[in-house]
Length: 328
Ligand code: TXA
Ligand code: MG
Image (cartoon, rainbow, N blue to C red; front, side):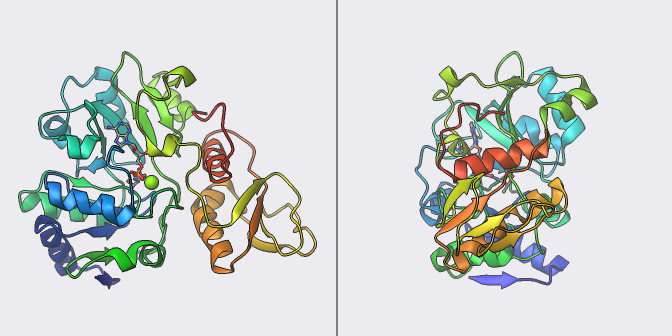
């Protein structure tokens, strides 16, 4: 495995060829780093599952370079989904659509739908275009972490998470820290209205304001219908125990907005000034606690709507708390 930091055109060509040849390429997106494989190569995709330690029935998101490729992977696309794609791609939004024949069971976890996303990150987009120019059709990429662990937002975090499972020929592309820091919003577009499965920086209100579309929240009784690993009750977890909204004890990690003082004896892991900052540094703060071998992290969650809701969703899952309203 090789980590490449100076991303030139030659590097993109090499990475695209590596994907085409069946290797894994970890690459940055605007949300988190993804672990990419050729989405039509079953053997390459199987390696994603083994490197991540992920159960085989959890579907992968297929990354494409533009909305023009949507019809290759999906069929019977509702008009509202096309509108979402037009308005928010490239961007941190994944659409779940009825799959085409191209999206095999090894991508969809055996489901009849496929997750698609056009990431808004120059290196990711250039890599996808280069891959498509070699005849590739899409890059399957989950977050580049072990199953259930914290998503990586830097190349170093990718290497710490999965480096030892990568082989000769696999690559990690380093293009600095991810800008958003938490995973894409996932919208189920297989019914008459879009339904939010995972909150992200594209919020229900943002969609409403920009498109007029109403996004429904998922009904808990339907929770098991769609398999989404982010919907498990324990996910995005560091080694340290995550405790919400409590005062930190001596030797515990502490994460809160910058205006909240550090409890005596605890170790400050982050002091975000804004909600954007909170999201961007959330996972590196959680990782810092593990690097320092702290037993516990006490987290004061941010208040507010939009991105703050997505942060709370991840923190609640990291804490292993059952979230009654986890579509919020
Ligand atoms: O921001 C992101 O979405 C990042 C970057 C790399 O693009 N990717 C990401 O992938 O977070 P992953 O696999 O870690 O999380 C995607 C979630 C999983 O929980 C998966 O089960 C769900 O999306 N998903 C993917 N395809 C699906 C499908 N066809 N139906 C339902 N859920 C799906
Ligand atoms: Mg993930």
